[in-house]
Amino acid sequence: MSVSRGGFSSRLGFIMAAAGSAVGLGNIWGFPTQTASNGGAAFVLVYLVLAFSLAYPAFMAELLIGRYGQANAVSSMQKMSRNLWQKRFAFFVGFGGIICAALILSFYGILAGWMMSYAIEPIARLIGLTEVSTWLTSQSIARNLVFSALFMMLTIAIIRRGVEDGIEKWSKRLMPMLIGLLILLIIYVFTLEGAKEGFEAYLNPDISRIFEPDLLISALGQAFFSLSLGTSVMIIYGSYISKSENLVTLGAQVTLIDVSIAFLAGLLIIPAMYVAQAQGVAIFAEDGSLISGPNLVFDILPTLFNGMGAVGIFVAFGFFVLMSIAALTSSISMLEGPVSFVVERHNVERKKATTLIGLGILAMSSLIVLNFDLLFGLVISISTVYGQPLIAMFCCVFVGWIWHRSEILAEIKQGNESVENSLFWKIWPWYTKLVCPLAIGAVFIHSL
Ligand code: PHE
Image (cartoon, rainbow, N blue to C red; front, side):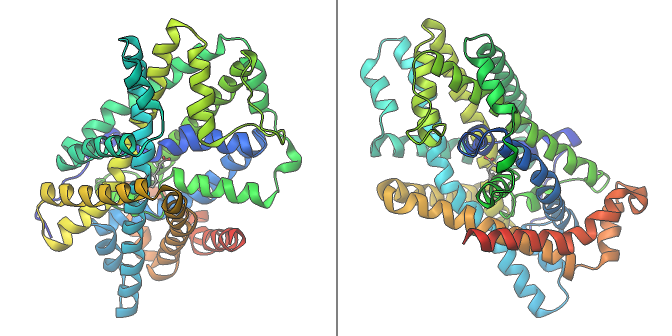
């Protein structure tokens, strides 16, 4: 294992990095899209409940594993194991999470590449490069390869610098920019005609839909994706937190930021759709549901921006820069999972490991781009529909059934002396032991 593994230098550094991982395309694109296709506010309500009742406890389990182990996901979990079978199980879960992170990055990099090309497009238009502008916004293998590569280069450049100089420094720079941009865009959209109607559609729940199984499954999947669970990412970020920090509050703060930004993103996107409608754009599909998926971000919103005249160029630029930043603070966490494993277990130097693994994942992205119809959806479902819930469930099983309760308490007590008498300690242990694995398992089986 490397002698000095680095760590976050401050509480704020951790919060920005972990929130940076959590807040990504999942919040700003996935959440509003799912809200639009699942009955608006009913989805928002279910999401909020599931995020705090199931995702937060599982998130705490992963953070704790990492801080206890002070190492990559596999080593951390093996440290808690007491016999050979447990060690094997630890390897399976830890390594499974690492593979999951790599798979997610391989498709996420393509999506992030689209965001970057759409961010550059308004500039091309502004300086009169019409052909370039058309190339940037039309689907082509060349464009997808170029922009996935550019995005991966940025991710590699940050991770090569390590935890404090790379992850922490850049998350601290990018996250406030992201929040600022998001708020500016919301304020702007609210001044436009039609926004009020969108606001009402977003906040008035259709209670009858709340218990629909499909809605529950989508909301839970969204919450797990958003908190980056089941990917080893939060284990490794947990391992970089100082032992003097109170994990219970840190975890809650990160969850709160993540959920709030998803909520804010809905407040931007859904009203923006209704503004588009007021300008004559069709926002409902033939079956009467709100248009969602890629069309929402790459058709409806650009049409809206174009309709705004000169200012639209800047709004479009701001929006897609926002998307690109959100993606970058998430992608660095996905790369850190596999990199920390190779650096610590195989004694490879960080810069070298980062470049090699980053290029390997880029090769996978290129393969997906070249066989898009076959691989894109497949990789997404293997990693997010099957991989993430399963690995997250196993992490809860590990903490609930294999790790000794007294050892867990000793770990949480560091930085939180009075935790034993808190509500958290009364609920969380049995919750992680029983409720989380059962609930995740039930939803998982249903989704099959
Ligand atoms: N949470 C990120 C998002 O919402 C995605 C992510 C998944 C990041 C898994 C890291 C690991 O976009």
